[in-house]
Structures are given as structure tokens and as C-alpha cells.
Length: 296
Image (cartoon, rainbow, N blue to C red; front, side, top):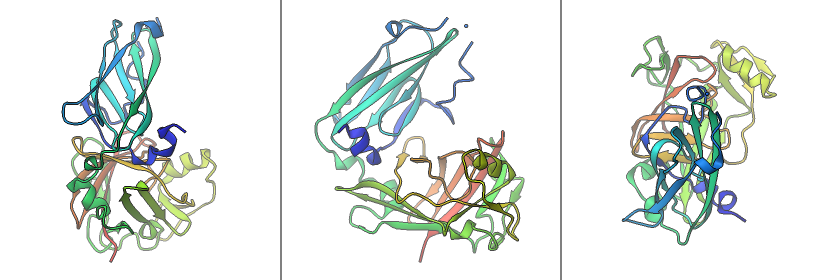
């Protein structure tokens, strides 16, 4: 079985030479004749440091903007990206070239011969998961006792200038029921276990978007906005991009507050704090800020 299935949970960061918040979105790129697959090409070259890090370059004769699926749950955009593959196996890399006439995709399957666990043994992964030695992983919860643990503001801003939640401000909602256990292992890879007592928290726009996906049982808690019935899967994947300081939750997971996005900017991460920002995809121009701490 291809490693995209067996080892997909071990996806790591991709470094974007050119980046975007949502590189898979195509509306910005379509301008005039569809390119053909024969006009597309890209190269894949192992880095000088390790064959598990690949330098991937667009070499297409047709001009356009390349958008990448690196086959390890990581995305990218731009002429050159870096993909990291700590576990051996096969991965399919797909480049979609957006031109003035439309878009076309091509793919290549690459083989990683050996594991390279050193790619996972970094400070950012140890802070999030507890490291390889912590077999139970590390559980994070919302920092409900601190002012500003949850807030909203313009997506382009660096802080939640519209509203910041006071300590305990969402106690009468499902927000503080959310628990996220991140772990990494040389046998089971990178894993997220999310527990939430059967509900997630969101606002009206999020509720409406979830209803389109079949999550229609919603109630208004005393804390305001909406609790929606939502049972997480048994486990999920996750990836981190150390260079771009981002955290992506795989398989549709999110941090218990639904914004339509699964990709988070890491504003601060150490052994005691995980501070994140997410740009909503259900409300244009909105950003949300979350502060989490280890569960005691």
C-alpha cells in the first residue's frame, strides 16, 4: 500500500519559497487557454543534508503559478518548495499550474528509501507532543483562566482587536470541553486525539456552514453563539511547518471552534503555551486567536 495511506499521518512541514494562507484556492489565478499536461514539468532533487528532504522546482515551459500537494498532507505555492518525508515509502507529488487560460495538474510518485527520525526530533515537535519518550503524548486545553485566551479581529491584524474573551467567558459553552492530545512515535508516527464530549463551538456563519456538511443539531448556550453536535474521529493527522510557523490538522480536524479552516499560524509555542491564529474561510476578513495550555 502506498505510503500516502500507511504513513500519511507522519506528514511534516513543507517550506514555501512563496506562500499563501490558502494555496489550494484557485480564484486568484484563473485569467484566459487551458495548459496541457505536456506543457507542465517539475524536478525533484534530494537535498544535500538528507535524501528525506526534497527540493521540488517548477520547470514548466508554460508560464503560470504552481500550487503543490506534496503527498504528505502538506501544501505549497511558488516556483520552488521543500518537502520533508521522515518515513520511508511512496509519496505522490502533484503540481497544479494556474495560467491565464486555466489550470492543469501533473503528478509524480517518489520513493523514500529509509526513515529519518531526526526530522521529527526538533524543539517545536517536542514542545507540542512531549517528544518521542512521552508515549502518552501531551494534552492541550483552552487557557480559560487567562484573559485573551479566545478572540477575534481583522484577519490581517496581529491581535484580536475586535473582541477578546475575559477569563472564564465561555464557561457556559462547549469551548472549554475541547482537549487535544498530540503525540509522536517511531512506530505510530504523528497523531492527534481530539475529545470534546460531543459538541463544538462556533458562530452563526460556522453553524450554517456545518449544516451544509450534515451537522444540523445546534443549540444556543448561555455563553452565546452556537454549540453544534460533532463527534471527532478516533484520531487524526497533523503537520507542522517550522519555517512558516504553521500547524495543520489533517482529516478535517480543528481546534474545537469551527471557522472552516484547518491551518493555524503558530504565534507562540513552548512547553507551557500554544498560541494560534486562524483565518476564517466562512467569514471573509475574520481572524481568530486561541491560547491553549497543557492539561494538568
